Amino acid sequence: MKAMMRLMPGDSRWSLLVTTMLALLLLWRTVSSPMHVCLHWDSTGYYFYLPALFIYDDIELTNRSWLDDLRSQYELSGTLYQMHPVPGREGHVDQFSCGVAIILAPAFFLAHALAEPLGYKADGFSAIYQLTAAWWSFLLALAGMIALLHLLRRFFSDGTTAIVLVLLLGGTNYLVQVPGNLVSPHNYLFLMMALYLLVVDNWRRSGRSYFFYIAIALAAGAALIRPTELIWLWILPTWGSTSLRQAWGQFRELLIFRQALVLRALGIGLLVVSPQVIYWLVSTGRPFYMSYSNPGEGLDLLQPHTLDFLFSFRKGWFIYTPLALVAVLGFIPLLHRRPEWRIAVTGLFLINLYVVSSWTTWWYAQCFSQRVMIHSFPLLALPLACAIDAVRGWTRWRLPAMAGIAGLFLLSVFYQWQYTQRILHGDRMTAAYFFRIWGKTEVTDEDMELLLIERPFDGSMSFRNKERYSLVRDEDLSLRVDESWQSDSVGVPEFLLHAESAFSPVIRRPFSELTTRDHAWILADAEVRVPAGVRREDVLLITTAEYNGRVYGYTSWEAATDSAGIWKFHAEYLTPEVRTKKDPVTVYIWYRGQDTVAVHGIRTRVFVRDAAP
Image (tube, rainbow, N blue to C red; front, top):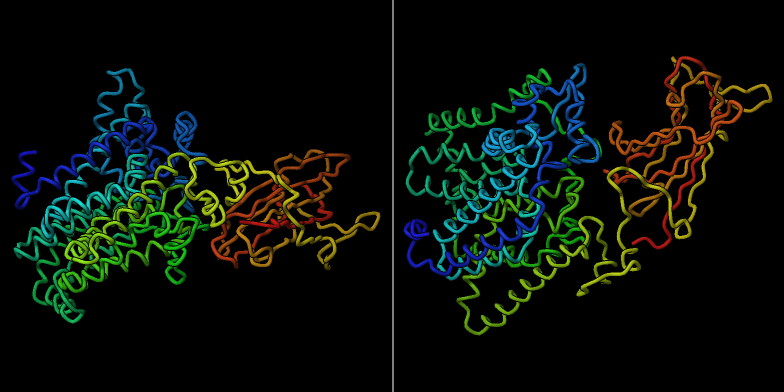
């Protein structure tokens, strides 16, 4: 603590006290969370590189049985969605980049050295690996707090810094998301962003080249965690500029007069990201590979969801983190009080908001508020501090403004409590449910009916509460046969499937034609005449959604009944969270055998909820 105080400018007693209290609160929230299960779901994909390379010698995942066994044993995730087959090769590729694995390497090697002596399995996922990863990540979160403290004290008073730390870390989703998801890219990026801003400022103040190199290494490291963090490079040429013209001049100066500096920094950046390039070369044969191949979600910069991202009752940032309004309003005094940040800070905030809200699943799965904004908190601390400085300088309106900010803080803390008590839901919130439970400390089953429909991770869905739905479409494929169909011995139309013709005609409708709501239930029935000897798994009823010709929301159904060579199929299909309203939903029969089977018909009935949230 004394060493920290020597590094802090002037009297920093309040900001140090607040940081200490927040660190203790972070520790309490951390040990209250299940630290022994931190390597699961997305974290499994981020961490995969370490056990695959150093324990199983299978970085290409040519034999996925070991990972499937671990996934089942430790309940890492419902499916192995983190890995995708590589076309033309035997192995799989991790859809997540390797930056988090590199950060977790010290914890992994420590756990691997201790595992067998302490009686744990040296398999990469036993409790010792989970605990060392969690504690190492906690230390990095603590380092992020300290880095933010240093960043704020460089530019603001002790009092303003203390207030901002309380508001930003205690009055947002930080103390909910970080302790409960320690092995999360947002935790590490928070630290890296705070360090990055400090280093860039050091470079502009001193002109020393090594600060520039460190800044490039941090930006490249951030991109190794999340490739979109390359947008951090916006800060380097714009920091300190008061206009776009000046920023352009600083950029030209780097490119024209400091080419040697830029080239050396580029070499450092390429060295930092080289592990990912090497991994892609080994796993796919290509130096650059689009590993995030889930067609159901992705980055769509032409159709951002910014308004939903900010204001939707499902996950709106301003709704569930009301103090974010104060931070954003802080850009007004920032433009006047800190003109040297006009372009750099304002620009990066707007670019980041545009990028993160362009992800098609903009609610980012199960989380409280917008977890993806956490790693930009060090940047947002600057306009928030400008807002607090401005309010503290008022005379007439200071107390009402501070009271309003305190009210927003308390409201956010209450939202945090509601979330931890499972009153606020992680991804199924609606406006109707929000207003029904506002201010409540408990909810009823009747309240829960106002949430968006539940979508279990294991896909175990069945059409319940049918009385609340209405039939809106009934379509029978047998009523629109053409010359490709034949007739059986009694004149019934049938479509023949065999090895050269494996797919039946389809019933395909854009999601927008099915419903204007968030989901629909499709009840699909089919009848297929099958000769003796055909395996049950060779005839499947398929239900899918598609984006640009690529399938997601895929479900296959085996025959429900089998009588006298006639197999009858029945599917109850909940439409997925469609990527676009234009995405078609498709139903058809797929035959994988060698004999000939005959499809007699496929019928779909679409049901939409009468009073959907």
